[in-house]
Image 1 (cartoon, one colour):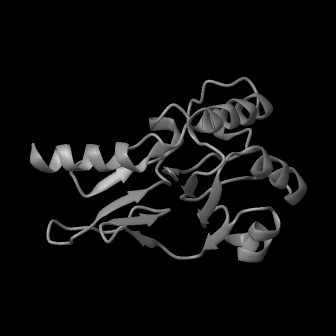
Image 2 (cartoon, one colour; image 1 turned 180 degrees about the horizontal axis):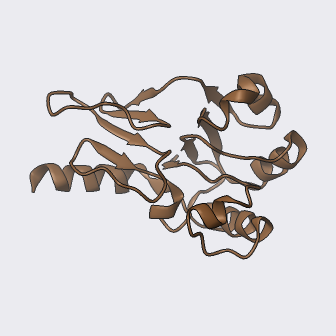
Image 3 (cartoon, one colour; image 1 turned 90 degrees about the vertical axis):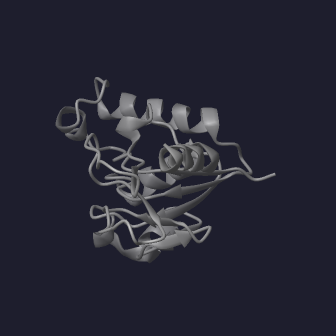
Length: 169
């Protein structure tokens, strides 16, 4: 059975993100290796991962090495730092699918890089990245940035259960 995971904003190779977001790493190399290990500790080879943007700041060869080290079938929704390279660049770097636009998953979860406008009448929960350590209040946004989740992807069930629990509360 294939498990489905979500994550965002790894910023592989981005040294400055360590200070910007107070990440607990001494170097970009240490950060990258730690995040690869965290990913592979939860994602199996046959699993699917939606990466909601800002994947890598490295060149294509180095990015390809990271993509190949990560378990799972990887779908990238382009983030603001990814868009300058275009879909084909990311496909050539080894991502399995690349979307320039948000994706609706299971008719309820709106997957996007930046948080989207949501109101209480919209029938979706926006699973997003981009805002790193910040968090929106309310039940219609779910921040999947690595800073909130110990640098590891979250399973669909973890997100679903968190959203359903908050809807019932």
